[in-house]
Length: 464
Image (cartoon, rainbow, N blue to C red; front, side):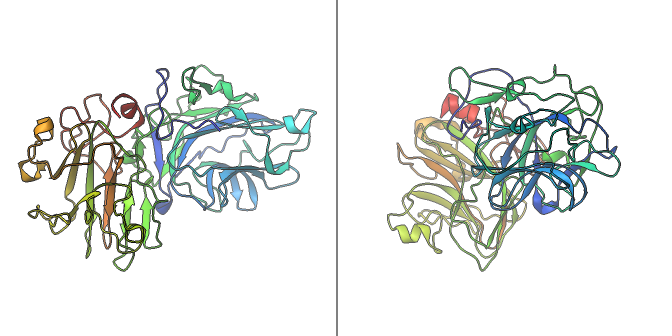
C-alpha cells in the first residue's frame, strides 16, 4: 500500500498538517466527547491519520461506548489488523487481512458508512491510504437500514484513543474528521502526490460536517480536543497535557526510537517512542533511531530521566561490530567498536580518548553529527565537550572522532538501569526556551548549530 510520508520519502508542497496529538498508553491518555451526541447512525464517514507506537496489542482509534459489551469501535487489534465492530445484533464486523506494522510511517484510514444501500458491501467501505480495502479476514456487513453503535447519544460516549474496555492507543493521531449524514470516499480527505505517488492529506475545512460532525486538528495545545469544524463539538482530554501536542505529523514525519530493534522485556518505550527506560538487570544492547543519515548535518537532544548502573548515548552504523553475536547479543555496548561512538554517564569514551563530563538525571545532552565532513560533537546543557565547534566544518574543532564516509549512521541509546527522553525535534518533555533549526522545524532546549537540522522527512528530502 502507498505509505504516508515514510522514513525515506517526501512529497511536494501542498497542504501542511502542523500538529498531531501524542497518546501514551502507559498514562491512559484519551479524549471523550462528554455531550454524548445523537446523530445519524446509518450514514456517516470517519477519517483519521495515525502513526503507531507499539505493535501486538489491541489499541482503539475511536469508539462509541456504553460498556465493553455494548459499543461500536474502530481499532487496531492484537494481530495489528484494522477492525470495525458493532457489538449488538448484525451491525457489522470487518477485520482487514492487511496488518499495520510500520511504526515509522503515517497511515490514513477512512470508514464510509451507509446502511441504506441495497448491496451489502456498499454499506461500509474502508479505505487505507486512498485505496478501498477489499481483502478481509472477517467480512460481515450490517443489515440494510440497521442503526450502528455510532452517534448513539445518551450514555454512549464517543471516545478517541480508548473504549469502555480500555485498549488505550499509543502513538500519534492527526486530522480526525467525522462527517454526519454522508458517505464520502477517501478523496474527500486526501490525494495522491503527482510526483511521488504518496497519499497525502488535503484541506478538509470546507467539508460539510453535519450536526454531529467534527474536525480535530490539535493546533490548540491548551485544548487538544478543540473542534474546528464550526460545529463546536469540543472534546475533553484525559491525562493529556500541552506537551502532548506534537509537530510529528502526516506531512512531516519525525524520527523516533525503534522498539523493533533488539527488543527486550527489560525495555519500556513511551510517548510515541521518544522515551525509554530499562531495568538494571536487563539487556545491555542498544536501541536505535528509526531514521539513519549518510549526508547532511543533524542535531538531537537527550534528557536523562534516570541514571542507573550503566547508561550511554552515541551514534553508530550497522554493523557496529564485525562480530554479529556481540552486536545482537546481550553484551553490546555503544562505542566499544570502530563503527560507533559512545558517551557513558561516568564520562567514559569506550572508543578511547580522555573522559568527557559525567552526567546525571535532568541533564540535557546534545549530539551534532556532521556527515558532510564526517565529524561528531557531544555536548551537555548547552556547552560542547572538548571545546567543540560543530560549525567548524572540515576543521572539526573538538570533534569526538572521525565518522566513516558512505555509512548510514543511527542515533543510539543504551539505557540499562536508567531512562532517557530523546528529542529529534518533537519533544515529549517540556522545553523552557524553544529553539528551531534554520528551516523553522523542531523545538529544542538549546540553540541548533548553524547548518544543522532536526531529523524529519522535510529536512531529509532537502539535506539528507
